[in-house]
Length: 82
Picture 1: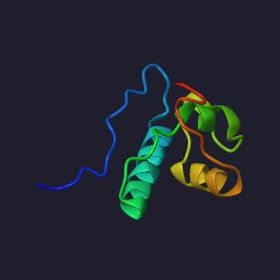
Picture 2: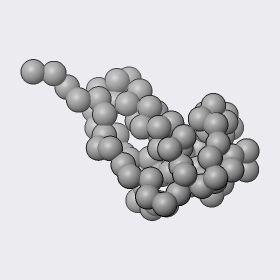
Picture 3: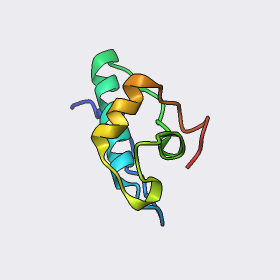
Picture 4: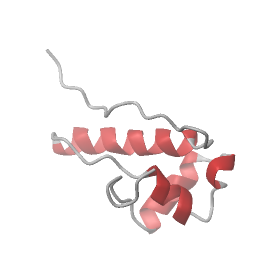
């Protein structure tokens, strides 16, 4: 029996934020692999609201979210719910 390195699938609802949801879930999985334990669900809303390089609900590029994460920070979904 293996270990699941993913969190639950999230629904982007009416917002075209698949690029942010995919980025966050990839980061969560990498953190689980690195630390070998459960990590918090990362906030898509924080990235959509604070990353001036994306187009919010109108789409965007995951690599710009990576640049934002390197230069700023990511927060949990409890801090900034979707």
